[in-house]
Image (cartoon, rainbow, N blue to C red; front, side, top):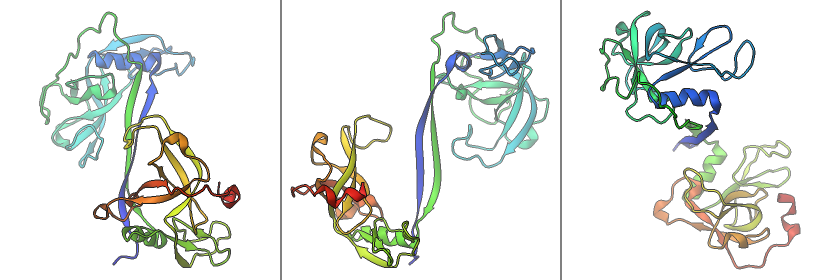
Length: 326
Protein backbone atom coordinates (compact mmCIF):
# COMPACT_ATOMS: atom_id res chain seq x y z
CA UNK A 1 0.00 0.00 0.00
CA UNK A 2 1.29 3.45 -0.89
CA UNK A 3 2.34 5.47 2.14
CA UNK A 4 0.66 8.62 0.84
CA UNK A 5 -2.74 9.28 -0.71
CA UNK A 6 -3.56 11.30 -3.80
CA UNK A 7 -6.87 12.64 -5.08
CA UNK A 8 -8.08 14.83 -7.95
CA UNK A 9 -9.38 18.22 -6.80
CA UNK A 10 -11.35 20.88 -8.67
CA UNK A 11 -11.51 24.44 -7.35
CA UNK A 12 -14.22 26.41 -9.14
CA UNK A 13 -16.20 29.63 -8.82
CA UNK A 14 -18.18 32.01 -11.01
CA UNK A 15 -16.42 35.33 -11.53
CA UNK A 16 -19.01 38.10 -11.88
CA UNK A 17 -18.15 41.59 -13.08
CA UNK A 18 -19.97 44.63 -14.41
CA UNK A 19 -19.02 45.52 -17.96
CA UNK A 20 -19.21 49.30 -17.91
CA UNK A 21 -20.27 51.40 -20.92
CA UNK A 22 -17.40 50.39 -23.24
CA UNK A 23 -17.14 46.62 -22.92
CA UNK A 24 -20.89 46.59 -22.42
CA UNK A 25 -21.31 48.20 -25.84
CA UNK A 26 -19.01 45.59 -27.42
CA UNK A 27 -20.81 42.64 -25.75
CA UNK A 28 -24.22 44.07 -26.57
CA UNK A 29 -23.11 44.18 -30.21
CA UNK A 30 -22.02 40.53 -30.12
CA UNK A 31 -25.37 39.54 -28.65
CA UNK A 32 -27.07 41.37 -31.52
CA UNK A 33 -24.82 39.87 -34.19
CA UNK A 34 -22.48 42.79 -34.92
CA UNK A 35 -18.85 43.51 -34.05
CA UNK A 36 -18.34 46.87 -32.36
CA UNK A 37 -14.87 48.45 -32.27
CA UNK A 38 -13.56 51.58 -30.60
CA UNK A 39 -11.83 54.49 -32.37
CA UNK A 40 -8.92 55.89 -30.36
CA UNK A 41 -7.59 59.44 -30.50
CA UNK A 42 -4.75 58.37 -32.84
CA UNK A 43 -7.22 56.85 -35.33
CA UNK A 44 -6.80 53.19 -34.46
CA UNK A 45 -9.91 50.97 -34.75
CA UNK A 46 -9.59 48.41 -31.95
CA UNK A 47 -11.58 45.22 -31.30
CA UNK A 48 -12.57 44.81 -28.50
CA UNK A 49 -12.64 48.54 -27.74
CA UNK A 50 -10.32 49.57 -24.88
CA UNK A 51 -12.07 51.10 -21.90
CA UNK A 52 -9.67 54.07 -21.91
CA UNK A 53 -7.82 55.76 -24.75
CA UNK A 54 -4.16 54.67 -24.60
CA UNK A 55 -2.96 58.18 -25.52
CA UNK A 56 -5.30 60.59 -23.70
CA UNK A 57 -6.41 58.11 -20.97
CA UNK A 58 -9.96 59.40 -21.40
CA UNK A 59 -12.86 56.94 -21.41
CA UNK A 60 -13.49 55.77 -24.95
CA UNK A 61 -16.81 56.95 -26.39
CA UNK A 62 -16.31 56.68 -30.19
CA UNK A 63 -17.67 53.33 -31.43
CA UNK A 64 -17.49 51.88 -34.93
CA UNK A 65 -19.14 48.81 -36.40
CA UNK A 66 -16.68 46.63 -38.32
CA UNK A 67 -17.21 43.60 -40.53
CA UNK A 68 -17.62 40.05 -39.29
CA UNK A 69 -15.05 38.97 -41.91
CA UNK A 70 -11.33 39.57 -42.16
CA UNK A 71 -7.85 38.17 -42.73
CA UNK A 72 -5.52 36.00 -40.64
CA UNK A 73 -2.42 37.95 -39.59
CA UNK A 74 -0.76 35.17 -37.59
CA UNK A 75 -1.75 31.85 -36.04
CA UNK A 76 -0.67 28.89 -33.92
CA UNK A 77 -1.89 25.29 -34.06
CA UNK A 78 -3.54 23.58 -31.05
CA UNK A 79 -3.20 19.82 -31.62
CA UNK A 80 -4.65 18.74 -28.27
CA UNK A 81 -7.40 21.05 -26.97
CA UNK A 82 -7.95 21.17 -23.23
CA UNK A 83 -11.07 21.71 -21.16
CA UNK A 84 -12.54 25.18 -21.53
CA UNK A 85 -11.05 25.98 -24.94
CA UNK A 86 -13.43 27.09 -27.73
CA UNK A 87 -13.34 23.78 -29.66
CA UNK A 88 -13.05 20.14 -28.61
CA UNK A 89 -11.00 19.13 -31.66
CA UNK A 90 -7.66 20.37 -33.05
CA UNK A 91 -7.89 24.00 -34.17
CA UNK A 92 -5.84 27.16 -34.61
CA UNK A 93 -5.70 30.25 -32.46
CA UNK A 94 -5.51 33.17 -34.89
CA UNK A 95 -5.04 36.90 -34.81
CA UNK A 96 -7.71 38.15 -37.23
CA UNK A 97 -7.79 41.65 -38.70
CA UNK A 98 -11.47 42.30 -39.31
CA UNK A 99 -12.36 44.50 -42.29
CA UNK A 100 -12.60 48.06 -41.02
CA UNK A 101 -10.34 47.45 -37.99
CA UNK A 102 -6.66 48.35 -37.60
CA UNK A 103 -5.93 46.03 -34.66
CA UNK A 104 -6.35 42.26 -34.56
CA UNK A 105 -8.75 40.11 -32.54
CA UNK A 106 -7.58 36.80 -31.05
CA UNK A 107 -9.99 33.88 -31.39
CA UNK A 108 -10.26 30.23 -32.44
CA UNK A 109 -10.20 29.29 -36.13
CA UNK A 110 -11.97 26.05 -37.04
CA UNK A 111 -9.87 24.27 -39.67
CA UNK A 112 -9.09 20.53 -39.94
CA UNK A 113 -5.29 20.63 -40.20
CA UNK A 114 -2.40 23.12 -39.98
CA UNK A 115 -2.17 22.92 -43.77
CA UNK A 116 -5.66 24.44 -44.00
CA UNK A 117 -4.63 27.75 -42.41
CA UNK A 118 -2.25 30.36 -43.74
CA UNK A 119 -1.36 33.96 -43.10
CA UNK A 120 -3.58 36.21 -45.18
CA UNK A 121 -6.43 33.70 -45.60
CA UNK A 122 -9.92 35.14 -45.47
CA UNK A 123 -12.09 34.09 -42.53
CA UNK A 124 -15.48 35.00 -41.11
CA UNK A 125 -17.24 34.86 -37.75
CA UNK A 126 -19.27 31.78 -36.95
CA UNK A 127 -21.88 33.06 -34.55
CA UNK A 128 -23.10 30.93 -31.66
CA UNK A 129 -26.60 29.53 -32.00
CA UNK A 130 -27.69 31.33 -28.83
CA UNK A 131 -26.04 34.63 -27.98
CA UNK A 132 -26.04 36.11 -24.48
CA UNK A 133 -23.62 39.04 -24.63
CA UNK A 134 -20.24 37.32 -24.14
CA UNK A 135 -17.11 36.79 -26.22
CA UNK A 136 -18.32 33.21 -26.73
CA UNK A 137 -21.11 34.66 -28.90
CA UNK A 138 -18.39 34.35 -31.51
CA UNK A 139 -18.21 30.57 -31.48
CA UNK A 140 -15.07 30.72 -33.61
CA UNK A 141 -13.83 31.88 -37.00
CA UNK A 142 -14.10 29.71 -40.11
CA UNK A 143 -12.72 30.01 -43.64
CA UNK A 144 -14.70 32.54 -45.63
CA UNK A 145 -15.21 29.94 -48.37
CA UNK A 146 -17.10 27.74 -45.88
CA UNK A 147 -14.53 24.90 -45.78
CA UNK A 148 -14.46 24.62 -41.99
CA UNK A 149 -14.03 21.29 -40.20
CA UNK A 150 -16.85 21.67 -37.73
CA UNK A 151 -20.59 21.42 -38.02
CA UNK A 152 -22.81 24.42 -38.59
CA UNK A 153 -22.39 27.48 -40.72
CA UNK A 154 -22.19 31.15 -39.92
CA UNK A 155 -25.48 30.95 -38.03
CA UNK A 156 -27.12 33.76 -36.15
CA UNK A 157 -27.58 37.30 -37.44
CA UNK A 158 -24.06 38.25 -38.47
CA UNK A 159 -23.86 41.51 -40.36
CA UNK A 160 -27.34 42.71 -39.45
CA UNK A 161 -27.93 46.14 -37.97
CA UNK A 162 -28.03 46.36 -34.16
CA UNK A 163 -31.29 46.99 -32.42
CA UNK A 164 -32.41 50.61 -32.50
CA UNK A 165 -32.61 50.71 -28.70
CA UNK A 166 -30.66 47.64 -27.49
CA UNK A 167 -31.09 46.32 -24.01
CA UNK A 168 -27.46 46.83 -22.94
CA UNK A 169 -25.33 44.07 -21.49
CA UNK A 170 -24.27 45.33 -18.06
CA UNK A 171 -22.60 42.27 -16.52
CA UNK A 172 -20.93 38.98 -17.35
CA UNK A 173 -20.46 35.76 -15.39
CA UNK A 174 -17.35 33.74 -16.21
CA UNK A 175 -16.91 30.24 -14.75
CA UNK A 176 -13.37 29.74 -13.45
CA UNK A 177 -12.00 26.32 -12.47
CA UNK A 178 -8.68 24.66 -11.70
CA UNK A 179 -8.16 20.89 -11.80
CA UNK A 180 -5.18 19.41 -10.01
CA UNK A 181 -4.04 16.30 -8.14
CA UNK A 182 -3.45 16.81 -4.42
CA UNK A 183 -0.79 14.61 -2.83
CA UNK A 184 -1.26 14.28 0.92
CA UNK A 185 1.73 14.11 3.24
CA UNK A 186 2.34 10.83 5.15
CA UNK A 187 0.78 12.44 8.24
CA UNK A 188 -2.28 13.64 6.33
CA UNK A 189 -2.60 10.22 4.69
CA UNK A 190 -2.74 8.61 8.15
CA UNK A 191 -5.48 11.10 9.07
CA UNK A 192 -7.56 10.26 5.99
CA UNK A 193 -7.07 6.52 6.44
CA UNK A 194 -8.21 6.95 10.03
CA UNK A 195 -11.40 8.63 8.83
CA UNK A 196 -12.03 5.62 6.57
CA UNK A 197 -11.98 3.54 9.77
CA UNK A 198 -14.19 5.91 11.78
CA UNK A 199 -11.29 7.39 13.75
CA UNK A 200 -10.03 10.98 14.10
CA UNK A 201 -6.25 10.95 14.21
CA UNK A 202 -3.75 13.73 14.91
CA UNK A 203 -0.02 14.16 15.50
CA UNK A 204 1.66 15.26 18.75
CA UNK A 205 4.71 17.50 18.95
CA UNK A 206 7.31 15.83 21.19
CA UNK A 207 8.58 19.20 22.41
CA UNK A 208 5.48 21.17 23.39
CA UNK A 209 3.03 18.27 23.57
CA UNK A 210 0.40 19.94 21.37
CA UNK A 211 -1.83 17.69 19.25
CA UNK A 212 -2.68 18.85 15.74
CA UNK A 213 -5.81 17.71 13.88
CA UNK A 214 -5.51 17.44 10.91
CA UNK A 215 -1.90 16.43 11.57
CA UNK A 216 1.16 18.45 10.62
CA UNK A 217 4.59 17.06 9.70
CA UNK A 218 6.18 19.66 11.97
CA UNK A 219 4.94 21.71 14.91
CA UNK A 220 4.05 25.23 13.70
CA UNK A 221 5.03 26.59 17.12
CA UNK A 222 8.62 25.36 17.39
CA UNK A 223 9.30 23.54 14.09
CA UNK A 224 9.89 20.17 15.75
CA UNK A 225 8.88 17.17 13.60
CA UNK A 226 5.78 15.49 14.98
CA UNK A 227 6.27 11.85 15.93
CA UNK A 228 3.33 10.43 17.89
CA UNK A 229 0.02 9.50 16.30
CA UNK A 230 -2.86 10.36 18.63
CA UNK A 231 -6.53 9.43 18.33
CA UNK A 232 -8.77 12.20 19.64
CA UNK A 233 -12.39 12.35 20.74
CA UNK A 234 -15.35 12.71 18.38
CA UNK A 235 -16.75 15.40 20.70
CA UNK A 236 -15.59 18.94 21.20
CA UNK A 237 -16.39 22.60 21.79
CA UNK A 238 -17.48 25.32 19.38
CA UNK A 239 -14.89 28.09 19.57
CA UNK A 240 -15.94 30.52 16.84
CA UNK A 241 -18.58 30.30 14.12
CA UNK A 242 -20.44 32.15 11.40
CA UNK A 243 -24.02 31.91 10.18
CA UNK A 244 -24.21 31.46 6.40
CA UNK A 245 -27.23 33.36 5.10
CA UNK A 246 -26.37 33.85 1.42
CA UNK A 247 -26.98 31.15 -1.22
CA UNK A 248 -24.16 30.44 -3.68
CA UNK A 249 -23.34 28.07 -6.53
CA UNK A 250 -22.73 24.48 -5.42
CA UNK A 251 -24.24 24.98 -1.97
CA UNK A 252 -25.59 21.68 -0.62
CA UNK A 253 -27.55 23.07 2.32
CA UNK A 254 -30.27 25.72 2.26
CA UNK A 255 -29.30 28.77 4.35
CA UNK A 256 -29.25 29.70 7.11
CA UNK A 257 -26.76 27.25 8.58
CA UNK A 258 -23.63 27.42 10.70
CA UNK A 259 -19.99 26.81 9.82
CA UNK A 260 -17.90 26.58 12.98
CA UNK A 261 -14.50 25.77 14.39
CA UNK A 262 -14.72 22.80 16.73
CA UNK A 263 -11.95 22.10 19.25
CA UNK A 264 -12.06 18.33 19.63
CA UNK A 265 -11.28 16.97 23.08
CA UNK A 266 -7.61 16.05 23.12
CA UNK A 267 -6.65 18.39 20.23
CA UNK A 268 -4.99 21.80 20.27
CA UNK A 269 -6.20 23.04 16.86
CA UNK A 270 -9.88 23.51 16.01
CA UNK A 271 -11.32 21.93 12.84
CA UNK A 272 -13.84 23.66 10.57
CA UNK A 273 -17.14 21.89 9.94
CA UNK A 274 -20.92 22.33 9.84
CA UNK A 275 -23.16 22.56 12.90
CA UNK A 276 -26.62 21.14 12.20
CA UNK A 277 -29.58 19.63 14.09
CA UNK A 278 -30.08 22.96 15.87
CA UNK A 279 -31.48 26.32 14.70
CA UNK A 280 -28.67 28.54 13.44
CA UNK A 281 -29.52 31.32 15.88
CA UNK A 282 -29.05 28.95 18.83
CA UNK A 283 -25.46 28.00 18.06
CA UNK A 284 -23.04 29.66 20.48
CA UNK A 285 -19.42 29.74 21.54
CA UNK A 286 -18.67 27.05 24.11
CA UNK A 287 -21.47 24.76 22.93
CA UNK A 288 -20.56 21.09 23.22
CA UNK A 289 -20.97 19.12 19.99
CA UNK A 290 -20.26 15.64 18.61
CA UNK A 291 -19.48 14.26 15.17
CA UNK A 292 -22.38 12.79 13.20
CA UNK A 293 -21.01 10.24 10.74
CA UNK A 294 -22.55 9.29 7.43
CA UNK A 295 -23.63 5.66 6.92
CA UNK A 296 -20.54 3.47 6.78
CA UNK A 297 -21.19 2.37 3.19
CA UNK A 298 -20.71 6.02 2.15
CA UNK A 299 -17.30 6.41 3.77
CA UNK A 300 -14.16 7.16 1.85
CA UNK A 301 -10.82 8.69 2.77
CA UNK A 302 -12.28 12.16 3.35
CA UNK A 303 -13.44 14.48 6.11
CA UNK A 304 -16.88 14.29 4.49
CA UNK A 305 -17.29 10.93 6.24
CA UNK A 306 -18.40 13.22 9.07
CA UNK A 307 -21.70 14.67 7.88
CA UNK A 308 -21.72 17.44 10.50
CA UNK A 309 -21.52 18.15 14.20
CA UNK A 310 -24.59 18.25 16.45
CA UNK A 311 -25.19 19.37 20.06
CA UNK A 312 -24.44 16.80 22.77
CA UNK A 313 -26.81 18.35 25.30
CA UNK A 314 -23.94 18.82 27.78
CA UNK A 315 -23.47 22.13 29.62
CA UNK A 316 -21.46 24.71 27.69
CA UNK A 317 -17.69 24.62 28.19
CA UNK A 318 -16.09 27.28 30.36
CA UNK A 319 -14.59 30.10 28.29
CA UNK A 320 -11.16 29.63 29.85
CA UNK A 321 -11.04 26.08 28.44
CA UNK A 322 -10.96 27.31 24.83
CA UNK A 323 -10.03 31.01 24.92
CA UNK A 324 -6.51 30.26 23.65
CA UNK A 325 -7.97 28.49 20.61
CA UNK A 326 -10.12 31.28 19.15
